[in-house]
Image (cartoon, rainbow, N blue to C red; front, side):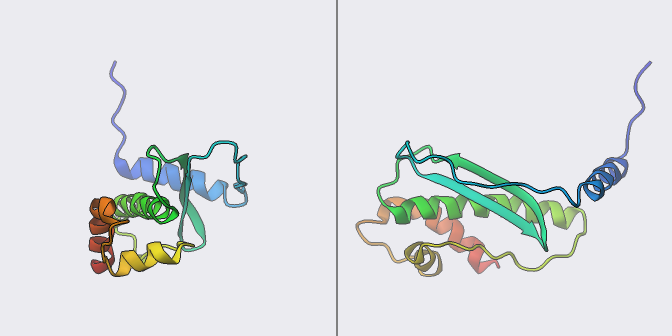
Length: 137
């Protein structure tokens, strides 16, 4: 006998019930040892005060500069935001324009004004993707 089909709203209700039961649980984020010289990208995404997505991984490509490493992280976070944005629109959840915080002023400057110099020309694809997302708010 085939299992009955479950509507997507039933699944959403189950997920929301689970999340409601987890309101007072926490997530400990701490830095790992720095024995490996590869850059580690970390992202946490909140919807209001609620943590809804997070990741931490070593970058697959060795960056030529800290600006490039930070910018790659901004690009990955923009991709994650795009997916979450699409999901929230589909679920008809209201939200405000997302804000990405970055501690590298040069990477932030490039995101807002993509001026290419000899040191940043190899970053053009990521820069254009992030710039497009900034202009689209």
